[in-house]
Amino acid sequence: MVEKTVFLDDNEIIKIIKEKYGININDIKKLNRGSANIYSLNNDEFILKEFQSRYSKEQIEKEIKVINHLKKKDIVVPEYVKCLDGNYSFLYKEKTMIVQKFIEGYTIDPNNGNYNQTIESAYYLGKIIKGLEDIDYNLPTSDISSWYSNENFDNAINTYNNILNNLNDKDEISIKIRNDLEEKIYMINDVKKKLKLDEMRNLTIKGTHGDYSVMQFIYKEEKINAIIDFVSACKMPVVWEIIRSYSYIDKNAKNGEFNIDILIDYVKEVCKYVNLNKYDFKYMPYLYMIQLLNSSYGYKQYLKNNNKELLQFGFLRTNICRYLYKNATIISERLISEF
Image (cartoon, rainbow, N blue to C red):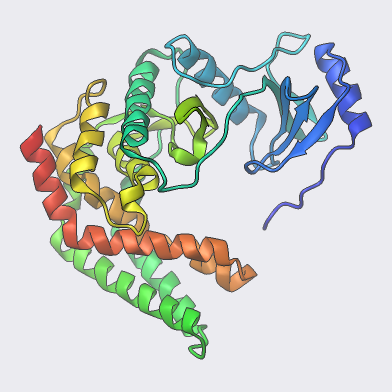
């Protein structure tokens, strides 16, 4: 269920910020950015973020700890403002709120990064993973073993069959959805037979951003000025974060097809800071493919809410599956030969 957006009125915000921070507010603008309700305060001096109720205070406090730690490592992250009571967040109407200093810059759409911007993304990812190695905080571990379990494959196939049984094949979109999902079912069945999935237990697990991509970058003069949204920070196989973040920034990967030479350069840049093993290089493309093969995201949202933007995202992810299904072995062998 999508949470209804209810904005605070200006008088509420003025009162809250004075009470919690001792700051006088004279200008408020609502911003359309991300899933949180966001307000610019005092002509872009501060940002007030009101998180959706699905995010707990503990999750937000984890993000703050991660950001404050990475700031000491010279990584470009937001700067949160302390409340008068010494905390960095507070609850208001059962939602967690924070204030941070305004970050000057702009965002770019996925798959619009040039070569330098693509490698810069890898540079910061490597620095983040390295920087989190000594954090004095127990990051949660994301257990991805379920991604490649037979149960998960079977659940994905059942989901796709349920969607297929409810499709109306009288329009081009429905026909494309049917072709995509039938192809994903075929690829899942083939992957189950061919891959030694148990070997993925040897993938390198480290702390990382958890949702690292170009969508979390704020740019200034074509360079990253800040990396935001660390609420998903966790320990997980870092190769998933590496290949996924590459796929979202490189302009050569716009239609789901990778430039393998640039991907190799991307991995090499990360590896200046992170040690990976032979299983990481072997299974990097397969892990990403499996995660996307099992996901119906985009298709279900379109059929339920007619969300065409998310449907296009679903189409893109299936294109990535097609590409990796044909080229994962090539990518894997190139990675092993280069390292």
